Image (cartoon, rainbow, N blue to C red):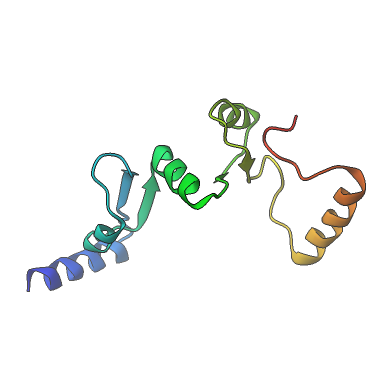
Length: 116
């Protein structure tokens, strides 16, 4: 019964515009299986945890939301090599993306954060 009451209360909060974020996931004791136990809307994952997952799965990490040169510089300092955001481009439709890829192939390689 208590779980049902919590879900109802959380539903009312969400309808009222209240969002709940879990910050720094991956620091201390963290388990992906425990995420179901929390009524969260946003999961902020700590960089060390992302790095461990990426290394274990042999994946690259992409930083999102890059809007300013200072952010690019900060990401370079922590060896994050890929990024996306308005600093690089506003969203484009499929036709425009195809045209950009054709043009880029003729000019230079894909833009990476490490590349100046």
